[in-house]
Length: 127
Image 1 (tube, helix red, strand yellow):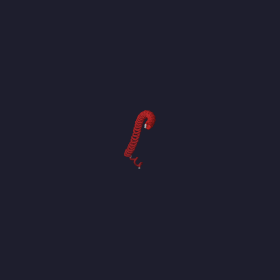
Image 2: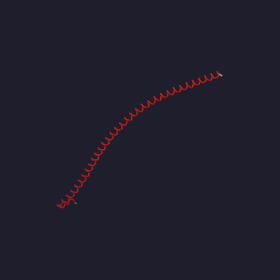
Image 3: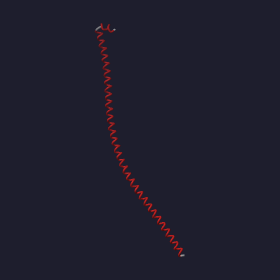
Image 4: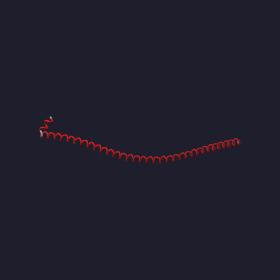
């Protein structure tokens, strides 16, 4: 019986050693994976920081572009206003010229009538 017990103890010891060995291997694998994950996490943190900086740069650029566009819009609005003023001025000048021409024509006709009434001999020439 003692041999059986010794054989049983030996088997148990071997099994324990195997289990311990497997456990150590698994722990080593887990440690390696953990290290890889830590490295990956660090890389991701760095990447996040870079992206954050890039975002800030883009936001600044966006603000700058918005300001430039705003200024450009104001300039264009001013140009449009000037053009509208010029067009309005041209239209007013045209209307004034037309009215002036009409008044001149009317006065010319009135002068002809006055001349005709003063000089009946002119009337026969016109007819």
